[in-house]
Length: 196
Image (cartoon, rainbow, N blue to C red):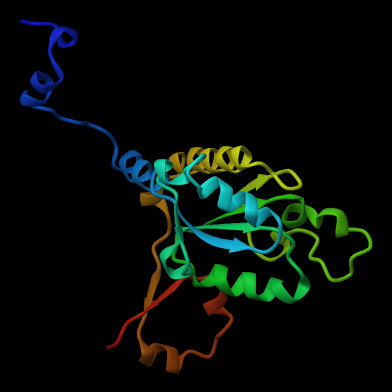
């Protein structure tokens, strides 16, 4: 019997190939390597985010594809200064993203308010006051390499998750919603609406 190292690439694929792995690992591998990010550039950090997506750094080779719609994205990159007026819109766009969703805070302004944190009454003192942040990318503005490192850190986090153990959404029918008086319940539990 020949050793595997002596076989050519074509001979290796002509034999039976079986991959045995946990389903969680396979799901996480596919999710970690297909991060569709929502382009949310607010200030000068957005230029660095565009540079990271450009041909020199090429985020596409890591499976990170830019999307213009929050409904098609699973990663939001908040790049730049978040003002108090914009904070409500950031939260609304985050809520429109499908689960599971992740946030990368890029730059000093979105991390902590940046140079405006002390005297700028109009600037949010960190985007984590509005949406939960998974990865912080420091810098003013951070280099495209720093954003790449942030995406790699997010990939590590995703690969450690257990998606099959996550709580499943509750299915609520319109007749039950009409009967329900506890509307505070809707804020804490994910719901899928179905027509009965």
